[in-house]
Structures are given as structure tokens and as C-alpha cells.
Length: 214
Image (cartoon, rainbow, N blue to C red; front, side):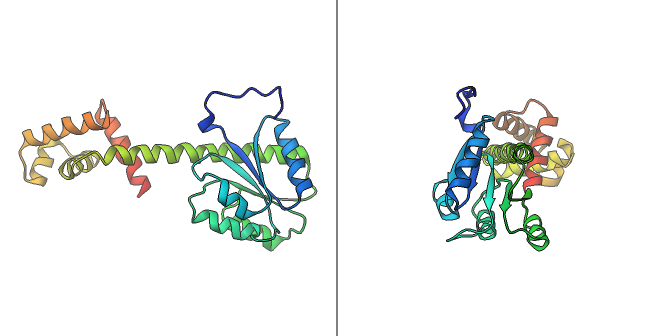
């Protein structure tokens, strides 16, 4: 790592650039380039090594060679989609063509760069991919937190919560659920306490986030 780089205290959220290429000289060249601008870099010789060692919950992005033994770039891309990885992928290849590029992008790749590449262009692409990767990471964390919060509600509290999010007043909710107005108000108080919400607006935001996950 570049000694001039300042390492933050929040290591959990520090993004990594994963380099997967079967050519050791390419891996080390990319490591040097990326670390020269203070990126955290992890290198792997093939897709199997990456899957065995990488954590799908960590943020970052990937520089992925297209043609490799054991597991090619497209195969790894497909495997990642079913293994919980949301890392933006930048494909690197010396044998690219239009059909390959179209396939990679349709399958969700961030970009497709042909070797030999311009160093600054690659660094710019990595910066954009990391930004996207961090956005996905924080969105996933927010979704997990929402799920954890809502799991604290009882079945009846969840019914009241869902109707509150729809914009129904307590009196209407009472009629809809065939319970008393006072019972609805008690449920509302419990819901706000469990979810740590100080206003109806916060409850609605939680409900919208939960709906977006569905």
C-alpha cells in the first residue's frame, strides 16, 4: 500500500478492488496502479479463488479477466449473481468483440475495457464503479436494518403498521380490523417505540423502504 495513503478507522466500510486475472504480471501491475492512488486491492488468479475467499457483504468493485482457466469471467459473473454479490464488474480482455460487450452489459457489468488500456481511463472507471458499489452496499444495509426492525412487530402491530403506511386514520384502522380505537392507539405507541420512530413520517419512510424490497 502507498505509504502516503491515510487509512480510515471504519475498516468495515472500506471498499476493495478485487482483481481476478490468471496472468500474474497483469495482477501485480494492476495492484501497483490501484494502490498508487490508495485503493485497497485484493488479487486472485481465478474465479474459484475469489469465491472461496471473498465476502459478498463487503463493498467494492471488480476487475475481471474474461478468459481464465477453471472459471471464465462470464461464468463467475453468473455465479456471483446467485451468491449474494452486488459488486460492479469491469471486464478486462485482450479478445473483446461487440457480442461479448453486449452480453457483459446485458448481464449487469459496469463496463468492458480492452487490453491494453489507458491507466487513467481505468482508474476513472474504477472510481465510478466503487461509487456504485458503495451505494449498493449502504442500500443493502438499510434494507437489512428495516427488515430487522419490522421483525420486532407482532402480527397485529404489523397489520396496524401497514394500514398506517397506507395513510389510514386510527378510527378507520379500528373499523378495518374490528378493534377499538383505543387498541389501535396502543398499537401505534408500541410500533413507534419498537421502531424508534418519532413521527408518522418516519413510519411511512420505513414502510416505503420495506415495500421497495418486496
